[in-house]
Image (cartoon, rainbow, N blue to C red):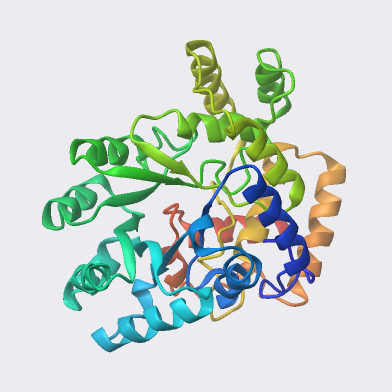
Length: 361
């Protein structure tokens, strides 16, 4: 969400967010997605102030999530869930997920009966629909859906860059959900904004087919065109992005065959230009003992890898040193590994920080 202070993710610009919400709602959209840790815990309260307190309850739906990594007892789930209701300003949550299930977090939820907890809250009327968001290998997804058929929906990372990616394996995960008859919510359709800023050759490819369509629209429409996908999430940071996204999704048209071919070509071109597939979600930086600006350093490195001109090196070095005044440098990494455990993209963060250090220190 937009910020009043770019260095403080908790400083949400409520006035601009309110304008974004109003345009979104005016155009007929109702679905909002939040979570306990987003914006250092301020995303939920921003939702309360800009949506829940300003619109009748039947005008919107909200999704929230149980932060599995913070659960050390069953009592923690009850406490956090009640806090989320208060933060969001609602008496019930329309869609509620176990957040970012992977092998470790699934084991935690099994230990403390996480699925039983959300099923109970559904029976109490405090949740309308239950499910989970997922960041791991297809085999684990198969196991979860087999062991917990009560899950109604799955939130998956799907975009045209990750569809056949060996790490994300979006296609295999999608096919497993379809086989189990689960509806799918798509996250990261624009891959953290990286598919909104594509190489010039990709932009030209797209414009030859749809001259006025933004690169982001291709990514969102790709995800929305998949059978079984009932919602595509897009993290919009300003009014212009809301305007663009809602403009082509008001009367959604699935990708044509020609457009699907173009997207496939785009994916091949983009993969060659990205050194580190970071989406800047910042999950890796929470709890980093050295306070390393991992996503920002990776963005600098990707820019150098893509362009590599002398003026890019000069500006990159300056930006890197500026960040280093308030954050640890890449070379300060102590290789504790907590960042890699939390990375939804399964990036070898330690190895790539070494590359950043070699390039810029």
